Image 1: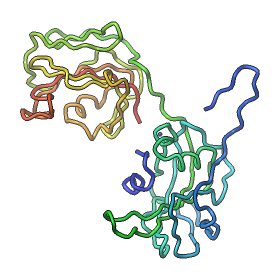
Image 2: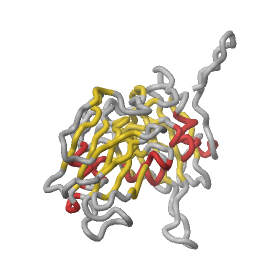
Image 3: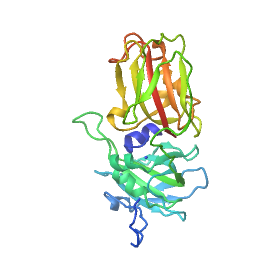
Image 4: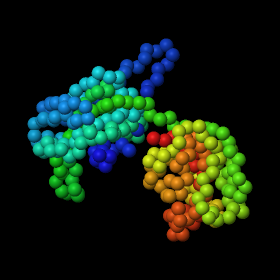
Length: 310
């Protein structure tokens, strides 16, 4: 279902304030969008816990733009920006109502109501922020053409139930924890006047095994291989100390699943804690090998600040 969501709801994979003495901003409410009249015939029948609702609508359902509305309103608290909503999803064909996928019997899917979703799909974001827990929303998505010039496929209809919500995990701005003195013989790391780590590899021998050394030991939760991390990092080659990548230089944190990176990162960061700054010395067979990827060739050295996990 994650694959289907990535296609149908781009951006998955996410407060207003008031001045002193001013009245509080009104609580946001779910915003319908698109050809909502085409969803007027939609009726849902409750089939109990862990079961998808019965779905009836006039067929075929055909929309030309993403369309979303609340079909049944729950009685829980309203979803807020920067929360993570746990949802169950039933996807059916708009042509004949046949089931495409059903997650109601499985573990809930997380939907992050963050800026990435707001930017990538404002229709979805605005529909969920302000919806009440327990609500069922309908999202009709136009069919996509298999190739340019081909006729678009049938509209797909998603029925989404909001089961619960929680605040999104906090993402740190910088490492937080106890400073650790590394053993001799490793690359040395110093911060420049902008607080960015700089790595020196002078006199460091090629590693015979992966080195994963805390420079700051964070106090947050431990990282699992199945987690998605938010980090800042800088990477240099061990042979020559050439810097080949740096999120610090780009000015923005990076997020990625730990299963989707080089083995040296997966093995070296699993078990570390949020808030840590970690020095990785990675043999080439756990990185990109001799062929490399761009300038990242041979044995590599990284400093990774683990700032968030989900």
